[in-house]
Length: 83
Image (cartoon, rainbow, N blue to C red; front, top):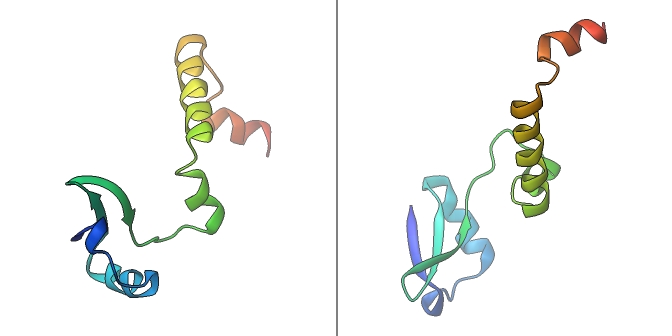
């Protein structure tokens, strides 16, 4: 992992992206993490985009909470229904 202070981040995005093979590149501002470049493995653009979308993540959390409280259909039951 590489950490670079925002004011010292004078390289191009391509240069920093080339460094992620050895670990994430974390950008800090006054010592606080503000951004990260991380390798994306086994994920397409849609998956990567949704995994950082606050509204989508809140929707998933609400769905999980509701399923825990009210019950839901198991994966096995869904597979059986759609065979």
